[in-house]
Image 1 (tube, rainbow, N blue to C red):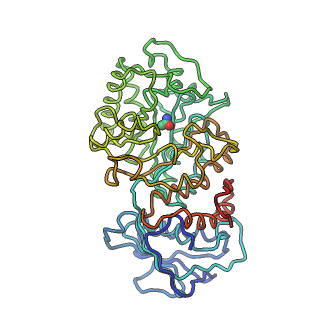
Image 2 (cartoon, protein in one colour):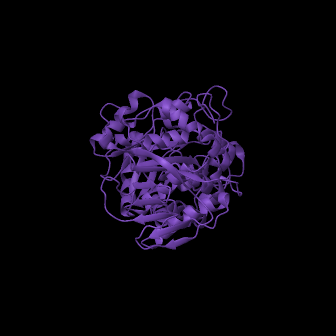
Length: 492
Ligand code: ACM
């Protein structure tokens, strides 16, 4: 029983259920979202087992030899994402009040099977699921990861595979850092030069790239099928050189900037004094909001060293209002906590310098909920140790233990559980040029992050966790993930 994130409660029973060529997946009631979860489960199990695993509508009578998915009830403790999973030698019963709970329960079922279940070709089996009773629901509603596709660009296939891995560990937010000094990665039809020119390069001078609106919609839909909300970020008013290179009128001096392929920060700013700046923000947010069913648009707001304090406040007051006018809630990095926030705005804590904590605490005083992304724990671009090929080290080395052994509600005095929306890891890509580097920096820190966001605080310990994580090595290998073989983990 090496489930990550660790469930709220697991009781082991005698015996096991064994998948066979006659196993069916029975869903009740036969509603589209429940059928979709049954179909998804079948797809996860078919390749390695070679079994047909037909998905059939079921009555309420239990059916021996079947995996049953049922939805209903309104158990407030299980909430929108919780589930129960009961395995006996006769049958498997997955029940949840809501579809997202079924989806998370499917991930647990996958992890109860042997690692070879994740192979993409038929394997010999057998396919036992240990008999047990699991009751499970998340600690935090926001469990996410950010990927910077601006410093280096990654195509839709890389993104979809990454989403599959997030889903496996029950994450439910995928934050795409779509714009920065080095590149603008989302097509905005009313400002086409943003991608044509601003998307044409990246750190180191490569060709860059961007998502068409159709690409982005495909990512949103793929994530939604996995109960993951896309949180798109347009970083403003700093980190905007790619936009300033594309449209001269966005700079106060009216001069177009050169494209930028280095890795400095804090040198660019939109012009807070110009009316056209707010037309730009309105157009971008309007087009992005129309493509984004999720509640959130991330406005960035970090490291705006080229923006005066007055301009920063003026700009982000208007940008928050624009997000609200388009029916969304703004998210901002920690620095934004210093200015007056709209009631719905969410703040993302990241800075390790304690002198900067007042920005987060000021947001808490204003009633904002906080996403915890302390860089020394959650930044996936920090090197594991001095030998790590990729990454940076300004927040220190972050070994697998560091990424696991912290508590979101114990980071800042004055920031308790009730103010915390959840947690998020962040993979900035100044040094990350390839998919195998994304894998290496993300795994195996991401399972620890996922557990920190999902599992109850009581009962978590590094020694117990690392033994479970060790058993995920073969699973990650079966997915083809180039994970870091940390010496802290007794790999299976
Ligand atoms: C950040 O790491 N600049 C939010």
